[in-house]
Length: 564
Image (cartoon, rainbow, N blue to C red; front, top):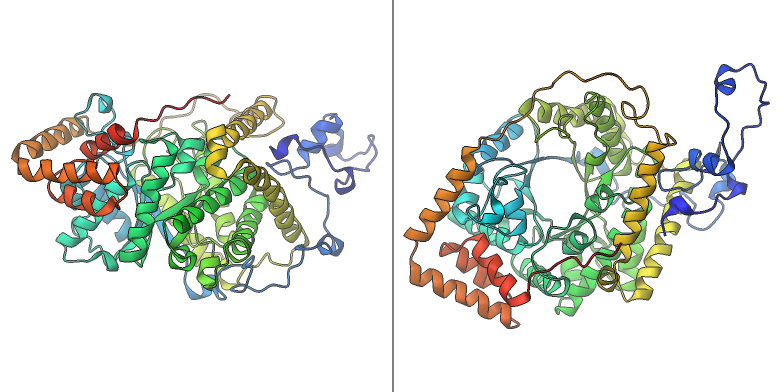
């Protein structure tokens, strides 16, 4: 249930007791509000009521205490004892546009400017499993990310970047197994085995059905593909995170922070169950699971979300799944500032929003962070905008001193109480999902989709009624904004990428390619692991679109039935 609809708990909301006739101009100018309006005004973005002041008594209930230490179960205060004293978070800027060569230049630019990890954005045809010359790709190649339909494109993407020296994240889901094969094969051409590769594949298909809507196959065969990657990664890629359980897209679709927390944890439960059903021991693969949070504008609620998430995941892994390895209990996370919070109006305000969100992620204890660029409501970021976003992280890390103390907000009456309330509210939602038979069943019934829709509509209503302020949108508005520099994608990218792939099909060994693709089809129809035949297929010149077409043929093409 959306927390925005929860009745106000009057015992926890302190009313303003100053008389209406007070000479305080702030009081005189305050508009009269109804009880409901006041309850929403003095609440988090998720609708959790906020007191005027918090005291020691707010910590008296179970799990409201602050005496656990960082690096100790249940890891509320952080998964490492020394946190940023030992190692600053990875600064991993999301990048990808145009051709592989275009994005390769951006990667080198970011690394030269102090970035410490790579994160790859793919274009819509790649995300949906189409080659650039397919009719569905018309006008979309390289527009929202980089076009990577073949092994050769992956090689060009990482030209001059030793893949055993860098950690790479790839935001890909439906065709994730194909991109993983491209990456492994590209590394082999550099003389690097899969056991040396460090990085993360997003590969969270449940959140695609819930929020982002980029898929190829229906939910159940998609989960089978994820199981195959979990098994392969566990056996052959000990440094690789085969799945990044992603709340980011759930939040960007309109959920509250509480819903993001609950739905993401529920997704994680489903993936752990899938790994166990595939024959893995929980401690074999759980240490390589990672998470991905959105960081929105409600500063303290976002910090509490990170803390509650760590505590919840540790308890789930220990109590529900019986994990023994301490690393299996860790909720390791990447975070990204909220793209949905950026505005086209007064775009320089976005610099401030991103800085506050980044600080919340750091105080929440993230292991990795992407900061959005101020111009992303107009286009993919320019080099200068991306550098400013990176510098935002560097200023926080180098100048603010927030890295000197582990969990500096730990013990705050307010933060500890809010962490507890976030956790309790998320447990309520997870219990509903468990009662439905788990997250896969809940997705098939449309439960999270409908809940997110309700929250998104409620948030928009509050913006339009001005009970939720957005500077430059419904308050402090100005006239037309002056133009800002934007990145423009060369229209020749689509033609070049289409010509490349057509040439590949003509010049590859046809019989070897046909045999390799047939092996993929047989594996899809059977029960064998799909990664090895797909790896051989991409080495034989089979394209992303051709493998995705096999999935569509064998598993069927999914159509969202609509749940609203």
